[in-house]
Amino acid sequence: MDEPEAQNQLNLIRRAQHKSARHGALLATVAMASLVLAIAVVVDLEMIWLLGIVVLGFVGAAAARPLRLRLNWSDRFGICLLALTIVTTFGVYVLVQQVARSLEWPAPNTISAFSAAFLILTAGLPVLMRLALHTPRTGEPQGLGSA
Image (cartoon, rainbow, N blue to C red; front, side, top):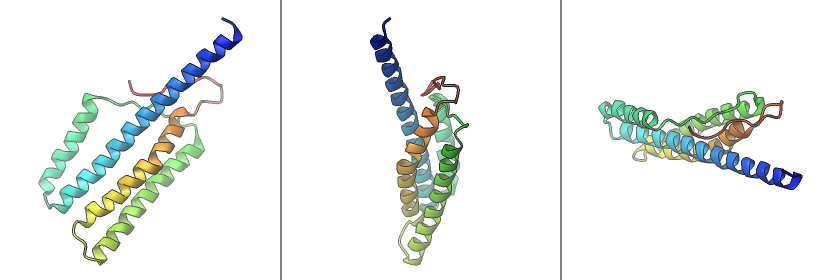
């Protein structure tokens, strides 16, 4: 195998890893955003008994098709970004819910969950992709995607 052919193979592998990381991160963020919305809707409908069934449904779906997004936890900046995303999402959820309650809007939990889900999808996806694509310092490629 000559040098251009080897470079082409390496580029194909990198593209496949990037695509796999994006797919895995997208599935994880969509699942989390859906869970946040489902819980908020159940709470707003005052059907607390349904809350356990919703959570068990999500756990069952995750167990039926296990998603293993292999994240590299050695990226300290990526971990800080993930923690910042979680804290910011929680803060936005609480802030929007306070505004919705003060304005006496119907379904304040659902309204705040939409804002949190939007933040999960917009900020969580790139952070998870960063953690999935980060390679260790040894230069070895990191395993990615769903298995």
